Length: 263
Length: 332
Image (cartoon, each protein chain N blue to C red):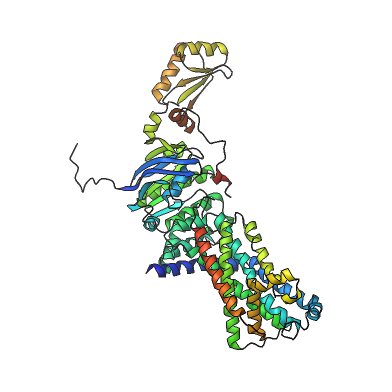
């Protein structure tokens, strides 16, 4: 076998290990799915009519409020998996097993790749679940199969980017508690974007931030793909953000993993 | 001495050689230029107190940490330039068990088999064999999180053996184990050398452990090797062995002190410490002297050299670092 096929088979072994963990101890995964579902129900039933009336006439593409907020919540589901990765990597680092891996002739990237791919798979499953709940409570997207495919691709790319960053967080965090706290502020970023309400409804300073932060272009692209609102330049911006963050996250995580082990 | 021929008495080739290994963390010097030469198929023990640099030495030799200076070759491969070849030849069982707590014992071993790229059948065969050998077959389907310290350590070593390593590093393999598990571990280590012909690099805080297992022992203190030799050679350098004789009253103690001359006496506990190599003739000689002077002794205990004596003798002070908790002990 070549070194590349070794790298692939080592990564697959690590992936199997992580999926086994997830299946055997699903509480973490479940709590990650529950969050966006609760959020969806909260914003649909509790705040929905007030928010819907409040933003009427703004660039929401018309229609029900659920059709505005669902893409935002779906995107939040994609971000919530990051915490699982950060905690999972950190727990592994505090135990002896990673040092064992490091003294074996296995591909250096395999350990992280296994975590990241496992996490992306879990996250996409929870995204599917959240979409299903959204459809149940009245979300009516008008996307074509091709647009669904593009939306899936976008969400996968975003998850990949956030997961690599989270892997880096897991490597620098000293304890699993820290690892689970660091990604938290980033999970709230979509709120200060166009996930729940349009940025036009915000005060000037906040609006400026909301319009230019990465999640807004992602949400606008997703909303455009699913609901047919205008995407404009958001698509390119979203793609650039995802690819850029993936590259940064990957390089950072690899560098952190290659450090000396004395922590 | 008969002439040695290449085939009948080949020179032992070297499993580990190191020259001038040094490592500092900040301005704390952990290793200050140590040299090692360990022939294939032997057991080498690195003996020293907490914080002496034992774990750092293992971390460097097992490619986990890079030395600041110095060179080393493991199983013929350069540690830095050919790290993957070194990794393929070694197995490491660290001080803290490197097992996956969420998997079962069997899954842990299969994980190792997969990472060593054994095919499915070979992996299962090897896993079953190791479970049997380490007496873990019955608990093979239980998650490791339920295991006792001794079982965990056995599984850890079993995982190390999946890849048939030629050189095995054991970092304090029995620290924290109860006496029975310690004996089991010693048996396993002896068997490894006898049956598999592997080279073992062992670190320990216990002189008796090094004595039990090692062909050669090196004493590490403050990052330098202060002595090296066989257990016998080291013990000969340590005059720590003595007989402790207790008497019923101060008069008898005084009389005995006069008989033996320059010995250490403790008036408080009414004991005399008489230097001894622990052999029967010296023991008999001491008793004969007491008998001929008709001095009755209450009790007699024999004291054999321990690590404290090693350190007192070799460094001129008690073993260092015992009180200070080393950082690795806080790692979990």
